[in-house]
Each structure stands twice: as C-alpha cells, then as structure tokens.
Length: 207
Image (cartoon, rainbow, N blue to C red; front, side, top):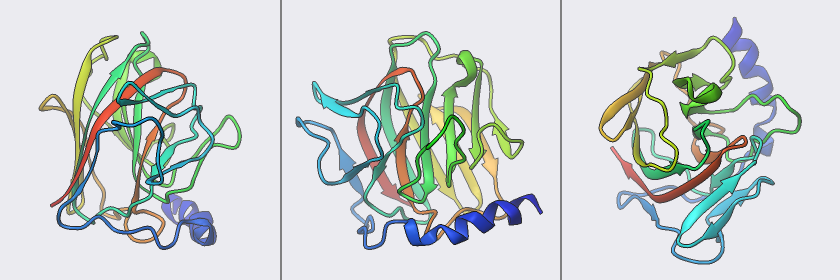
C-alpha cells in the first residue's frame, strides 16, 4: 500500500518530467568536466553547481540536484570519482529519477534511488528507494568518508538489483521487486545537502 500511495503523486506529475532527452547508446556517456561551464547536457535545478579546475564542484545545494539530460539504459553501470572536503562526508547521487525533481522546502522525497556515502554525520551508507529518511532502504557496511580523499564509486543495476561500490568494496545493495523504470525513472543526478564536494570523470555504460 505504501508504494501505491507514493506512486500516485509521481504518476500525476509525469507531465512535468523531461521529454525528448536523448538516450545513452551503446557507446555510453562520459564527462570529464574539462571546461568552464556546466554545458547543455546538464539541468541545474537551482543549486550552486559549477565547473572549476576541471571538475564539478558544489556546496550547499540543499537537495537541488544537477540532472543529466540523458535517459539511462535499463541495466547500467554509473562510475565517477568524488571527494568531500567536509568532515561530515555526505556524498549523494540519484539514479533512475525523473530528471527534474528538486526540494522546494526543507523536506524532499526523491523520484529515484538515492545513494548516500557517509550520510547523517558520516555515520551510514545506504541506498534508499525515493525517501532517504523512510524505511524502504538498504544500509551497507560502515565505512566513513575520509575528508579530502578521492574515491571511485560504481553503481550498477542488473535486473532487480542495485549495487553501489566504493574503490571495489560494497557500499550498499538493494533488491527491488518493483524496480523504478520507464518514464519518470530514467535519469541520473548529482545531489548535495551542505557538504563541500568535488565530482569528476563520470562514465555511464550500458550493461
């Protein structure tokens, strides 16, 4: 019942999701942010996202994601490098969201799976199905983010399984018998609350 109730507003809001974004083909997608502007591939929902020194930088986006204007393959690997220069860690991305959602108040319910590394004061790692504060989530081994250290993150979906790894080690894994897919659940975003983050070398590969 919970998922049916959550799905109703999402269905009503599909008219607000992007239409016409190109899909990621067999060659995949790559962005090394080696330029001075975000560029047309990215939709900024209002956060202080910027490209600086060949990387994507953000601090204090408060759940106003940066959405990639490409639709994801159903089964996919998403890889990137990331560093937190804040002691709280708090690294966050969204996978299989609607390409447009953002926080309009202090609370925010995503349209995606939310992958968090070092959340809640660097105390937990998890994959959440839409509501990172809800019960529909899977927590992984405790592995705090080390301030100033660069990590390589890989997120994969095969079938009903979403898995996140950091430097080849499990971060969290979720089995979802009702996977988020199709229009409204086909975009990727970098997200952020308050931490000082640097992202780079995004690679998206169909599986």
